[in-house]
Image (tube, rainbow, N blue to C red):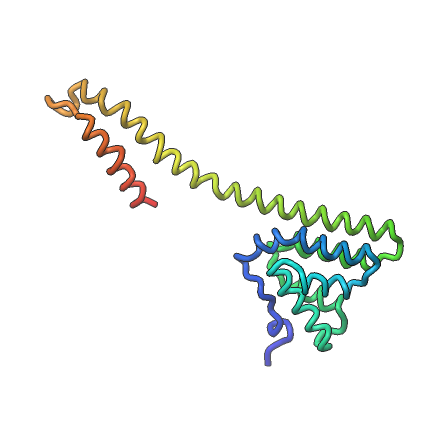
Length: 195
């Protein structure tokens, strides 16, 4: 028999985590509007389930369905349980939603606003970190393209004619057609084969 934990896997794959982190500020915005307007956690979850971003809408619909059918005891337990199933790389999303849950539990208005502000900051920080990680992953490929696509042909265009003048290639100097073929056909073909 399968455990309940394995029956209720969220529809978030690891490759969807960057999109989920991108949705976090919108989700927190919807929840904040509902909670700060005097709504309950139940109404905040339903607001995201109805009008939230695509991946989050699916998660929050599932949360509401599991709470409504009494598979999970209440909306809070259902939401926390569903967040615990998310991949570790989605922890900023989970933390931000947990802060929104804390805000819904707060009695004092000042504490509620502070928790919602913290939730927004966590969501934005998580999105910023995901952006930094993505841009860092592009660094090596961009440098390779620059080195092989710009620097190598430029060096070849400068050095090969000089070597030809020095007699390295025998009595016949390399012509402009051969240099163009080298830089426009042979080097790009080698780069494409290497990549």
